[in-house]
Structures are given as structure tokens and as C-alpha cells.
Length: 336
View 1 (cartoon, rainbow, N blue to C red):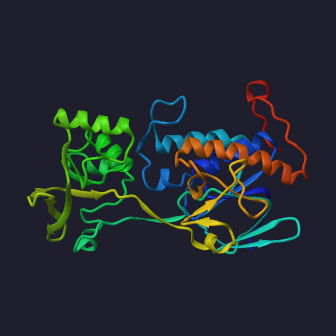
View 2 (view 1 turned 30 degrees about the vertical axis):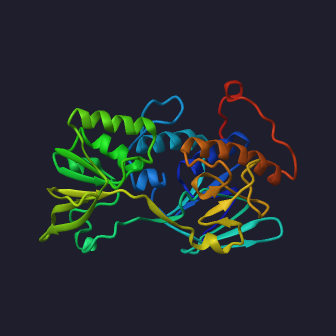
């Protein structure tokens, strides 16, 4: 059995978990991250590494994979440990510490646990279309790990949220054609993205069909066309190379749901003072938590991580307050 001891065990190596390492390192705290995925970065690495992100302060635009790379460089001085490709399956509270055990038998001991598991275990939300499984990975994709796959291809994208809008915008410079199908006229995405789509529609770079849904699929060994049904009864058949339904992800907490944490649907309720849970010593940051006014944005998760480590320090050092200093004065000191 592999055994590790650390100050903070972080479940989830997505952007919020990675930034928590930086904030903890500034206070001299060591971190160990555990993630079921084989690489750090969470959804940014696994689902949309080439998706541009526009709301990171000071960075007008950055690809998801580049943000992960930058975060890894930022935390490198603090020498975090990683257990990747393993899932935490058991949690035990000992007298002065927690013990986490993974499905591979790895044991991590720590005084504090930070759950930064994003949406937990997740799977794409699929549209209810006959024979859809027949064409999965044969013309139907639910995630876009590499946009180059769609260069000079004819695409039909379905959805009305940020993911559908952002990818429709991004892929106009790569694909031969992009059609965006939405079952309503109003979108759920950011106003800036909605306005950009409308501009691209006016310039002829995106075909927008609203009040409509893809309901039929056709093809032999590969998807060849779809039939789009509109609310007024019109049926539009469209030839394509790929159909990309982007309706979000279905979150599943997995073993975390059995740890006695206070849950609200599939999220962990926290105190916004420091994002602590109902179990002393366990915190939840990022998309995995919920509270009044919660916004599922990476920058909000960074804020939550920053406040979380302040309270974590007190737990680890028996109530002692951390000494807050600006990095512009202290610089970055490596952990020994």
C-alpha cells in the first residue's frame, strides 16, 4: 500500500484544486491531490482543452489547456504530490486526522480535506433520439477534446448554453460550415457570447435554427445527415460530417455522497465564510459546492480556495492565525 502524509488532501485536480495548492503553499502548507483522471486539469483537460476562456482576470483569452499549464507552473515551487487515475472510495476520521483510501489502495493522511471535484463523476446529457448510440463516435460527439478533428467538416451543434455558443463561435474558423440548433429563441449563455453568435449569423458564418430540435439520424456506418423538426411542423434534412449535442453534464457525486456531508441535490452545502462543510476539517470549493448566490465560474473557485486555506491553516496549526503577507513583498518561497 502506498501511504502519503500531507497537510491538505485535495480531491480533484481541476483548476480550483490546483490554485488551492498555490494559496496553501504561500502559507507553508503541503498538498496532495487525488483525481480519477490520468492528467491534472479536470474538465479543462478532459473535455475541452482547446476551448477559449475569457473570464480569467488579466487574460483576455486563454485556451483551457494553457490555463492548466500555467497553473502547474505556478504551483511547481510548492512541490505538490499527485495521485492520478485513482478514485477516492473511502473516508475515515481518526483522532487528529483523516484517512482517504483510493480504489487502488493508496492511503493519504491529512488534517484537512478540500473537495474540489468539480461536477464529481460526470457524463454528457444526451438528447432523446432513436438510434443515437449507433452513431456515437461515428459522427456524434458529446465533447470536443481536439477541434482540429473538425477542420473543413460540416457541423451541426445543438444547445443553448455557454458550451454550445462558445464552440459554435470557435469552430467557425475551423469547420467548413457550422449550424447551431436551439429549441428556444432565448439562450442561457453569456450575453457577450449570444451577441457574438448573432454577429456571425448576420455575416453568414453560422446558420442559426431556433425553435427546433434534431430528432432523426441517418447513415450507414457513419452519420450522414440529421432531420431537424421545427415548432411550426417544418422538417429540415441537413447533410453533415458531425453532430455535436452540447446539453451539459449529468453530475454524480459517487462515494462522496456517503460521507455524511450536507447535500443539496448533487452539490455540497458550505459556509461562505471559508467554504467549510458540516464536517469540521472538510471544505468544498468550486463547482462541487453550493450556497446562496453561487456562480459556477473558475474565478469564483479561485476566491473560494483562497479563503479556504486560511481556515485550513488554523486547523493544522491548532488555532494559530496565518500571517497574511502580499506576494509583491515576500515573493514566492519554495517549500522544503
